[in-house]
Amino acid sequence: MQTIDYRSDTVTHPTPAMLEAMHRAPLGDDVYGEDPTVNQLQRVSARLLGKDAALFVPSGTMGNLASVLAHCGRGDEVIMGTRGHTFLYEAGGIAALGGIHPHTIPNQSDGTLALEDIENAIRSEDVHYPPSRLLIIENTQNACGGYAIPVDYTRATADLAHRHGLKLHIDGARIFNAAIKLGVDVQELSKPADSVTFCLSKSLCCPVGAIIGGDADFIERTRRMRKMLGGGMRQAGVLAAAGLVALETMIDRLAEDHTRAQHLAAGLAEIPAIHLYPGTPQTNMVYFRLASDARMGTTELVKVFGSEGIRIGGHGDEFRLVTHYWIDDAAVEKTLVLFKKYLS
Image (cartoon, rainbow, N blue to C red):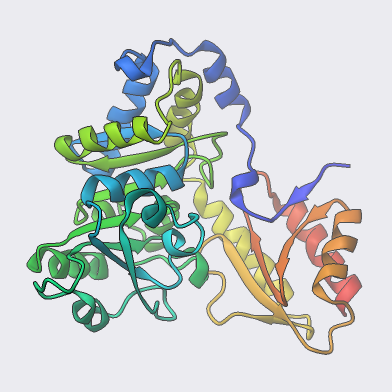
């Protein structure tokens, strides 16, 4: 029985075209800057983002951490959302490894940070305060429902940050999903920022990796940080080859994932025991809660779905179902049949 896995788009396996490219990739030592496949991936990524340069790193978490370390020194402060990935899910790395202070402000329901809250969070020059150096926003905003953060807002946050002498970093793990949702070129979302990361290993379907984009000086600093963090890879073109295939073949098809998420949500909305989050899905994530009188609780539902060959992730009474390349129309239909079977 083939497993259908909705827990995240991180569960995606490389496509046959990626595996073939990985097998045939020309290789070199990337720490010496000699891997031609890595170098090509970095050039293509920089061009897509509208940046001077880019760096291939093992993970999005390392990409964000290396970026923060390159922007900030020990004792500096970073402003970010209470629902931001760097604050919630990156093991406190900026504080533990960088001595950098996180200053959190609330995310709004659409994933943004209120401009007034950002401005109020920026410290004045005072010996008692950590210096505010960096603002982080996330696009798409995962923990707020996969919201795509629009171009005008991104420009406004960049203008605000720069006016106060701060840099802007975008955690763009799924920034191509945001671009597809908004119908814009990804450069419109990335160019206002001083740095941006995106994941190859999520909706783009690669087995490993992420990209950092920025100006040439910044990327040289992140290269040093990557080495310091243990991310200096050798014949990494084996992995980068999959990224090149992804950037050529996987971006435009993200719209299919969004459409399947919409179909999934429409079917779930017909089940009284399921309460969809307002506005879901924004991109490829469907968020919902179980009603208090649902026939099954979270743990039992996850277990019975697993026995049927479908993996779903539930925490408390909250569920997030993520569509991706390996979720097709038949998988969505089977999923809806089972939800109706166990909850109607």
